[in-house]
Length: 563
Image 1 (tube, rainbow, N blue to C red):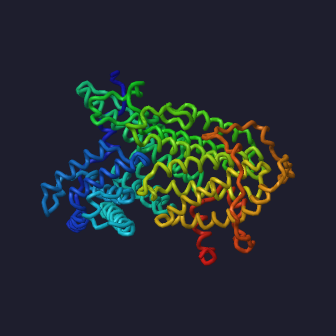
Image 2 (spheres, rainbow, N blue to C red):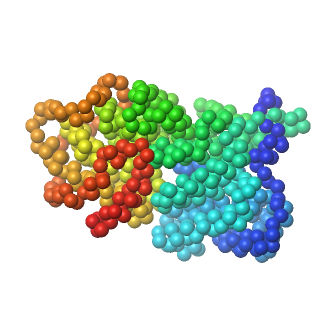
Image 3 (cartoon, one colour):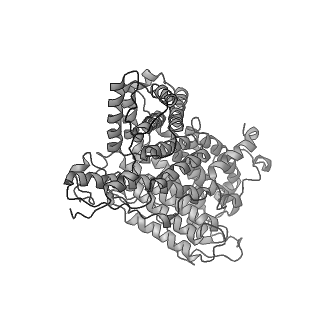
């Protein structure tokens, strides 16, 4: 240990205020009533374990070691207090902590596997009951934060808002989630989480104390990059304004390794070759992708009619470089699968990484796909790769994962983009058309399975069915055409050719061009009036498109037709 590692204790204290605050009798009474609504300790513990085993690998919003430290402290006070909760000397972190517990319980109910004892204890033996109680738990967490107030917030308050935003996203309430995320970001900025803290090992500090401080700094940086990633993703892919300016952030990226069970005995270093793989790799990858999103927005290439189209190629190639430089265990193509049997989430995380990379590439090229052939082809390949990854992820997931927002939104976005692009620019290659038809058909099947619990899946499915129906005459024509090359007329005027900028694209699976073509099933005749005229290509390449809001709006406009 060099003794020159990060911030003095006063600075750390400012970043994580734990001091107690005076509470009025009315506030104490309200909080006591809300705390009393917590399920039994046994049920609470079971749901907490479900969250960390079934959901946190995907979202990484919490770190179990630090959550458990707070839980132990809060539970000890709760037991000692009996029916009359003792608020004397209670830190602000612990005041907020029951709110965070409620949010964890709410999200855990979204992913609870069948046959768990607490299902019977809570009387939630069907999805309707679970969703209702999940909403009640989340609302109680919101109410606790309202009663405590947002002044002098702590890390726990930030995490509460992040978990609330996660809960909202899983119920297809993306706009509301964005507002809650903004509150979490502002609190985190007030706490200085966007700035790298410098801690110096004091002579009187033990090695264990210093290691604890180092890992606690790691913990805070992980929380910040999660906020950064969510904000960047919503800004770039959903047309939202950014709440975070990357030039204001000075933190060092976190280590790609798991936080140990006992930080005081572990030196924070990079993983050694013989150590188990990190579960945090996908989240560092997403952070790197989101840094590229910020760069793309600064260059203006997220908008149409970009002045320097070469920047698109540069960002594209840097995404491919990130994919190629992943640890071998997490690589999407030809991974090291030796850890798969003991680390069951790694196969799913590979598809999580693939989705993050290819959805960004699709969003990167989509605004330019009308005026640049190279971008249109890259966007199509990216959309195909997104849907391939979503299919694999869906196959790896159990039924309880159907609430994950990403399983719906990426599928809806990529499949509708492909369908409308094919209608606007019919491909001359029957093999490509066949690939698109197959992935869209699979996407419809997945959304059909998800629609009962996810409103976005239901609305997106209806639009996709209409778009896919409109594709059928084109499919029938292509599959009956002679087997010689078909030259499409130039529909774009002055545009880049595919080789003009040399965009390469990785294939996560072999193209299906050698497949035996089968005639599509007989489809009902298409009548133009069945497709709303607002479902068009220009809508889908708008850089400000929020696909979730657009789908829901289309659903409201066309609800009677879809019935």
